Length: 263
Image (cartoon, rainbow, N blue to C red; front, side, top):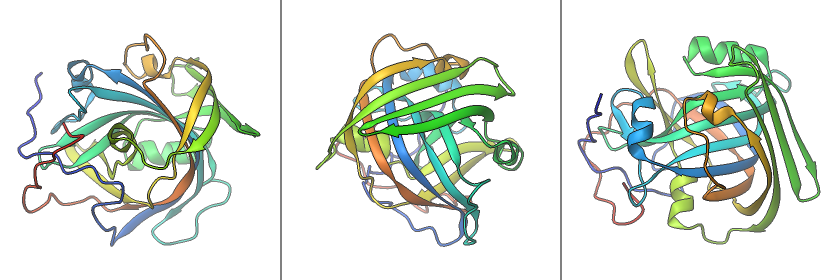
């Protein structure tokens, strides 16, 4: 079914959060992140997005992201994060979206995590596609290795084995790199209604990275086509602390038209 385009121009892409998180729902840190991105046809991914959103594009192209990292100390509200249950490896398959109010965000097609209780809470409380997997993140000098083998609920056998070599810091990210990493909310649905959860964190400290190995089936398990070539972008970040706010109300008025890097 064709999706309705946004009623207003998408909000500008900003390296710093465009909003405040006054009511904190969750706190956590994302550490040792590898960002892999492949270009995709917006028409191919549009049916995979929640109602009320369309693919967010850069120069007419959208992207599929495979993001592997360490989740660290997830905590509710402003309580201290949990050292064991709230700390685990995670690998996400994500798409890029914009809603009818111009709010840019990500849509998760799958979230592999190695702790069963957070997986169950994420599936039940937030209706997110969390899956339980056997996972590890290991560093050896400048080389970081991420492994994920799916356990439940499946499809069993879906896996990801990535190895990246971390390079020099990125002094000034390109417009595309901002588009892929500076995302300040998540689009989903709950009880059949659109849901937008905003987040805030410091500006990403990014590094160039070289992909040394990639053996993965998570993209096809998420309903996407298998990549036909190497990623269009490979980045690394040592990480940031993050706060998620409560479900956000739509903005009162349209945001200004964006001149560069928008959809």
